[in-house]
Image (cartoon, rainbow, N blue to C red; front, side, top):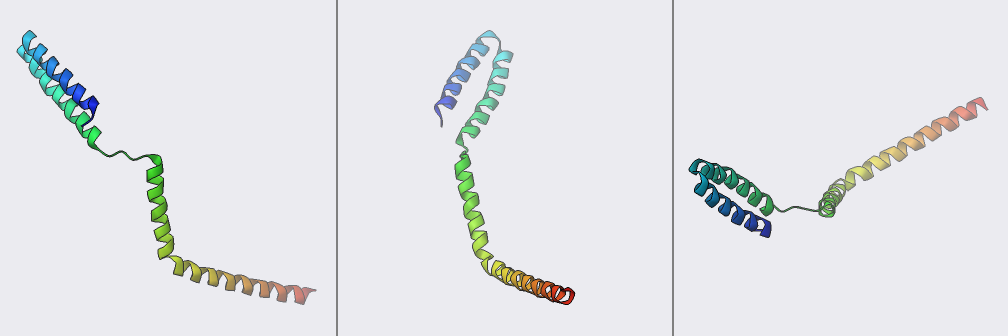
Amino acid sequence: MSKRVLTGAGVWALAVLGGYLLDPILGTAVLVFGGILLVVSFLGSTGRSTTFEERELARARKRAASREANAGKRAKDKLRYEAEQARKAKRAAKRSAKTG
């Protein structure tokens, strides 16, 4: 629990006590709404917040794993692409030989 939440809990307890001394309805309202805010702030402080660098590192690891998993497919596609380029070059050479 963070220091900010503990400070908020202390202020809330004092506000509830003061509210009950002034008026029980006011004290109840401070108790309910302040309690809700305190719970929300506690839940917000307990969540692990990641930095941009941590998220990018996780994404980079994920992309690397994906690249590694698809390495065979990429190699196969590269061979097919190179074969197609060779066929295109051969056709272009034939056309230029016929016209020239």
